[in-house]
Image 1 (spheres, rainbow, N blue to C red):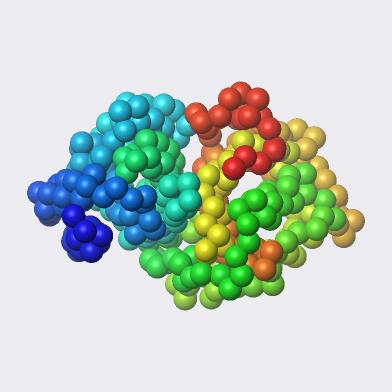
Image 2: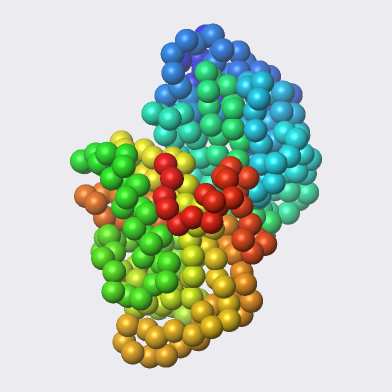
Length: 342
């Protein structure tokens, strides 16, 4: 099978937006694509990696893991728990949603999807990381955020920002991209407003489908702004010290780096210890109380677009998990560390 044939197969799949109406066609297309991959000796390029994401979703909706070319020792987690490959969302997915952001790391054969899905008829958010080895799926790491409102907001936006798919004028090395993205996390951890924050003036942060920093029009004409209607910039937020209550950002795994597009994707945990950590002083001298009252952890999936050493678009989805929870992909010391891993 030629590369063109595989690409045509991907387009064939994308035609079917409602999988239950065309399950047989999806199954045939997935098997066709799997066979084409096995016949190609070369590495997996961007189109190949994105194709794996399309067929992963098709397989999940069809409740059939055999539609994917799987490594013999494939590892699968959902929300930090290791499960048999056909468990969890594999039982309950009903169709693909209306929002899909796909990212690829060609050098290390990683593919990431942030999108919406239907589960038992309800809207949900799915984050999926696929690790590809020898044109088979060796790692599947997923977050399923079962929040219909978050999914509805993303579906309303519909199309991800063009910046995610556009190349940068000047490429930075992988390590430099990770350093810049990690400075974002370090700037939030015990935020005092006094750090050196590598944020561009046009930075706009989309978080759980809401624009919580920057101009919503930079995200989408249909994006919602802050609940208060105030448009506070990313840099202004960091310099205010407003995130002081975040006591630790740990298990920082920068699992995808794309120098061509200046994109970094990370998975991490935000810990809020509660108690006295809720009381802080902002950069302007005001004493405030903020953050959860009890120990609280957010599991977060976050993408950064970096140009000329500054972070512009930021996009994340997150949900609450048991305090101190691990990812299922790290040792215990790694899961407690704030050091970046790439």
